[in-house]
Image (tube, rainbow, N blue to C red):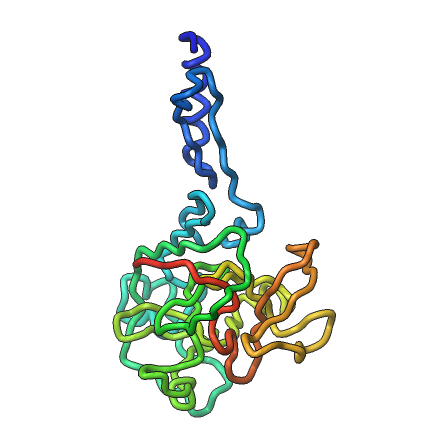
Length: 254
């Protein structure tokens, strides 16, 4: 590779470094004149507007977020964001009671399959994040601590249906109403760790009812016109996900 071509090549790699792409700027040892390999992140993931970065690593998409919601909450009280993000509870739950926890920032990295497939052996969801919503807030499963039902814990959900755990990790167990209010009840709301998308409670103008035990079904969507398995959020247990992941889950770190 001559100096002029090498210079242009390195410049292109530098310009692409800040985009939502993973760029391999290495030569093929067997072919010193080989071009760069650029692996793009599918456009649908760019809808995760709360991500600080979205990149591709082989068969996985890496989504980095802080987990801090972009809406107000009573759980911003006495935090560094209180002056702009604190809002007293103004929801409709007469039994609401604020828990003692406060929202904290994390360095989440969600590593999810870019081409999800049904798992031969299904796995249960664990406590903690099971996916990520469009605003970067994690999804949790249908259980409180020790797999207890959410019967009591639901009374601590703020006006947007989220709350922080004892360590300050804010999350949604149920419909993220800030998103469904702003994006629509039929909208894509995020992805679970197995790479399958999560949609709102309405489809084709009607509340969704025909879901399998994993809380999803398969057909074409606006985001996946060729068809895909996808989960739907509903108002009743299990809310987001049913008897485990439909696909093989990726991982997360924080």
